[in-house]
Length: 558
Ligand SMILES: Cc1cc2nc3c(=O)[nH]c(=O)nc-3n(C[C@H](O)[C@H](O)[C@H](O)COP(=O)(O)OP(=O)(O)OC[C@H]3O[C@@H](n4cnc5c(N)ncnc54)[C@H](O)[C@@H]3O)c2cc1C
Image 1 (cartoon, rainbow, N blue to C red):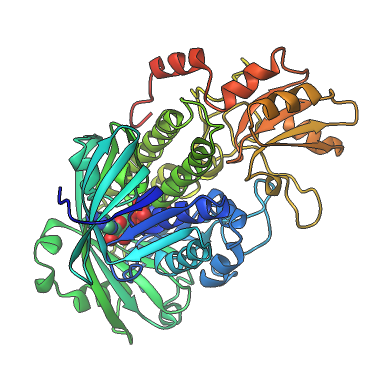
Image 2 (image 1 turned 180 degrees about the vertical axis):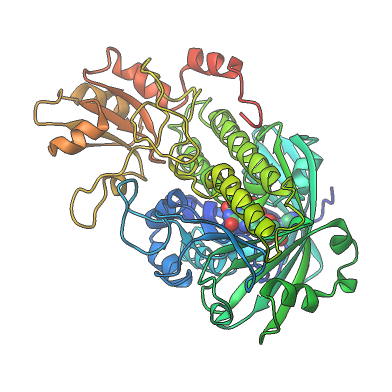
């Protein structure tokens, strides 16, 4: 490494200022934890990728104070989040899957927030503004990470300041790799990715087509999959609900030679006629369904696409990455503040890698279901055989693919099990469903939503330190727990909730919620050893750490 350069010191270096890097910087900023973000590009990306922001991600946006901004940037409140299957927009409809909990602002029973459709081209500037509103956050565009070295207790990175063509050395206590699917850091650390051997080759075409829905009879829909005798290889994704779309093509021939693709013809075919439109930009991309074998090496942590890649058809890559950022944020704060135990940061991989595998496995299955469809050759024919083929295929699609689009269980029902920093209570697990969310306070779960007042959810209480909830006026006196947490300098707030309905929802008279909103412990009685509880949840329980390390991870596709 070069020597004659000053060293920039920062507690946390985030490589990559995409959505996940910016989300982590936002979370850390809110905690007053300084960080430096280096991003090789000049500004946030301007070609659309992720659009589906699920309810859990919207809960994070709410915590960061940007949920309204995201909603305003998203498709209009009344725009339906329908997934439509048809032969073309002016052709035959085959299937329609509604998503009743998506869009708009009326809360559901599950969450104070609804899933929104806000593409990264609008989300990233919102996160960027929030991250840089903190004096403690520094964001350097056109700084490219080049190499790293791990020394005792710190990471030293060399970055290339592209504007000045100068190298800079950055020394950090922790480096968080948010550099996306092509992560140079993951490669430098020799971390493999495992999972499905499938590789999909795609072309993504950014199109402006004002009021497209006035040119056909299928109405507004968020996603349209075109079913043709050759299979399902093109789709149309609504972006702003007004005039912007992402037109997708799957095929190696498109990927290999984008300049030769007759985009105009292919677009006119799926609409079924010529309509006014403009092609804004065209990009190639590949899809894989794989998860990094390790999320941590020493002081380096992988988050977002650097850690897991999945076909985007189920809308999970970004949402999973935002979950990584939220799991890491408070643990980094605790480690730097000194109250985090030696196992706290190690729990990141133990908790988040199974979630990555679950979501990637779901995306893999869902995409294979579409990809492997073999439509009847008569599917687009105006004939009795065509009508029968469409009816049969439509039924099969709704049966198999509702779980691709209705994913409340994936969004809200993920649990950290095993986790060395949660205290299992031996209760039977609730059903593990993709589509349905079953509220529970079983340790490791997201603490459920309930309204405390017209606009304040119980989940609005979580975010900073730990929260110990007492349910009912007769709940045990928790002074011993408070004293134990204070002895270990673990931030704790105690709150008493007297609403019996919320008490019933929370299932126990005492529920301890972590700063990320997951339940760490619950009981009807005081913990027999409150100091042991404080040590467990701050990652300082050596026995629990040893046990969790041996626990088996879920295989992909489970
Ligand atoms: C067509 C498409 C549609 C999608 N739709 C959805 C969806 O609906 N919902 C969903 O949840 N997900 C979706 N995804 C996935 C989603 O886009 C990704 O999961 C998400 O962008 C990951 O965010 P990230 O911050 O981890 O990585 P990225 O967004 O890729 O950001 C990584 C950043 O790191 C920077 N970087 C890379 N190398 C360096 C370096 N050496 N030095 C400095 N900076 C560097 C890059 O410039 C980039 O800005 C979609 C993806 C695609 C391709």
